[in-house]
Length: 112
Image 1 (cartoon, rainbow, N blue to C red):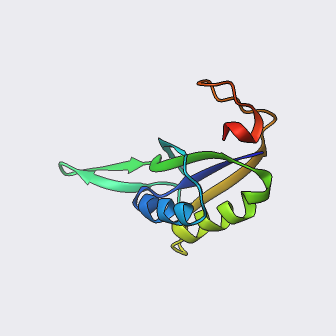
Image 2 (cartoon, one colour):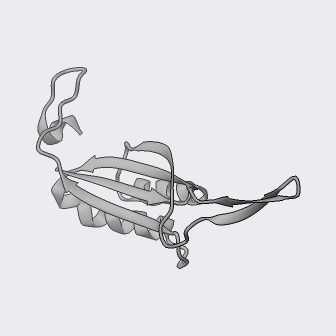
């Protein structure tokens, strides 16, 4: 099993969810996060004052999938999230040693 974490732009969420649904992914966790990469934030003007905003709002998607499905899921996230501009986000894939469904005790891929 693999855990996929993706940091995406908030306005691309519906596109990514649609692409994941086509790939057969049912469940994911979505968190609102803030940060920056190469874009290094931006400046905004509020009540005549200029402010530098260094942390940009993003969404973090987390999902655990069978190892055989990783390439398809990563491709779906890329398809849905890509704009071709700086700040599109990142995808991280890591190993999951165990998963357990609390409701009935299913373990391993059966818990997914």
